[in-house]
Length: 261
Image (cartoon, rainbow, N blue to C red; front, side, top):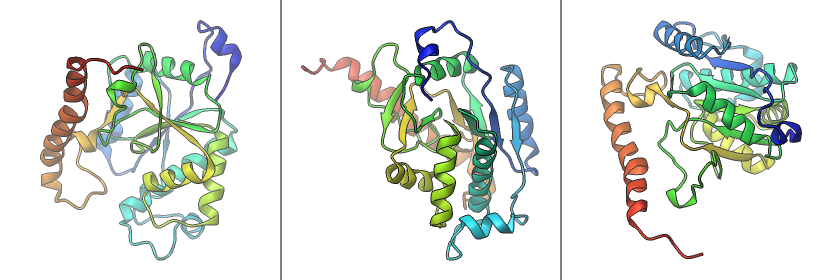
């Protein structure tokens, strides 16, 4: 993702960013939500369809999923859709592309903030993955934050609701999973592969979006909790975790004297 010319000239227009939306065709509410949000932001996108529960591509299943896997069909569907997006990015040799899941909720100013993150990423050496959201309420510790800095090294993905990779990362993922078919959800798969393949992970701070199935906006497509409980349960859990892990820690850090270096 390195581009010295763009880094030296921040006013230079960045190339259009391909956006792939992981989507299950039967989820009309999510489809309308993401279509409206990206439309308001003026960002073209492409749905990643196919591999809905009950309609998996048998070749992909045979190539990438361990027959001993006990994950739900929803988890397998999500995994296969992400892998399908990787295949498209690789086939089109795209230097960078954004993969988002269909239940994301964009923060205000998303388009401009996305451009700023992309510009900062020009100084990073590939292979790397830029994590834009914070569905699991993981944040860079306040003491590590620096004025004007947007991307911070991390040891793991936050979740897989939104991330930027390019064809090189996509190729590494696909080859590694084909060599060792997985039993795990996509986020755990990527955590293992990043360590194995030397792919650097960066978190955007503050996050550019959140995941609606975690915040309570949508029912989860893969959790086992009763559907009538998902939204209220997730709304309360997410709000409590965000207050403690984000707002309280930042408030507390302002009260403490800075550590000597």
